[in-house]
Amino acid sequence: MQRLKLIPCEAPFWAASGHGQTLWGHFLKSPELENLGQNIEVDLPDGDRLFCFYHQGTSDLVVSLYHGLSGDVYADYMQRTAILCKKLGHTVVLVNHRGAGHGEHHARHPYHSGRSEDVSEVLKVLRAKFPGKKQVAIGYSMSGNILLCLAGGFRGDMKPDGVITVNAPLNLSAGAQLLRTGFNRVYDIRFVHRLRNNIEGKYRSGLIAKHYEIPRWASIYDLDRIYTAEAGGFNSREHYYESCSAKQYVPFIDVPTYCLTAADDPFVSASEYHSAGFNKYTQVHIEKHGGHLGYLSRTPTPLGSTRWMDYYLNEAIQALAETLGVERGSAVETEPLLSR
Image 1 (cartoon, rainbow, N blue to C red):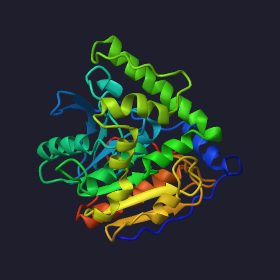
Image 2: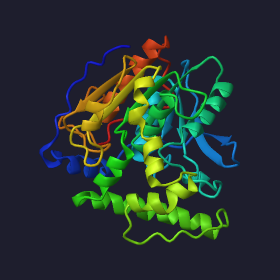
Image 3: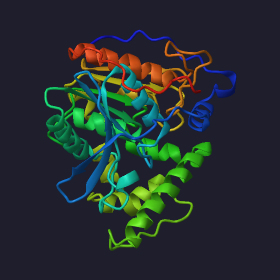
Image 4: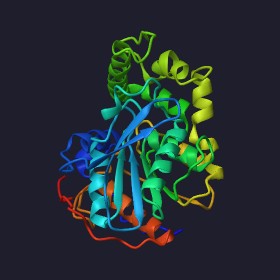
């Protein structure tokens, strides 16, 4: 694997904290795709369906993107990475997890941090649709955990050829507990509000028979006990956390993998990365500043924007392409990456 040589993310004074990075990274305007592209539907073995969208590239690399908790294909980081992949000439696929985005009314079962089998099913469809092309999967936050589980052999029988993760919570219990503390409750309440609405929608539309009573001020830790564990087929919340935390699977990763996280992430502790047993297939980079999916830089990166995460992904994608023997393709209808 190629070792990345990165310019540090020098945080601006107004986003010098983990919370500042996280919040401003979300609220500042991002470039968006002009359209989502062509539709791909992935039917899962249990009857649920995933809704994905792709833009065809000219290279022999397909990059699939997987959003974080309560997100969808419209998430700002998904949109920016799709634009980046188009600029590099790669085919890019934006994936809605089950019940998310366009699939809101097409899933009885929940997505969660251990749904590696869903990614496996997506990869089977992509390998059939794009035969002979290498498959790289990028997972943000929760999806990073999913991809590391899959790469380490947990659930699913089809792995990507390469993996990139950003701010993956390796220890689900620790992450859920951190979300309950201090200012993190702001993120926690937002997650639960959006997930509660999704669950209520399933009940009202008849997708699920049980009405789950989720208190207005519940935490993710509470929601995982009330809903995720039961609906996901686990014995308990603790069983879910213990079986689906990627930290125990990373020693068994056998595909080239790049992991990015930040020392100041408010609810994904970098200490979990220091104590995880990553092997030779994985390169971990812990940036001093970045928060959770923020990574705002004081000065423009070589890509011309102050979005340092996009710069990291550009370097990691190109490194994986080189490792996998894929040449860069021609840019396809690229939107500018200059918005801050």
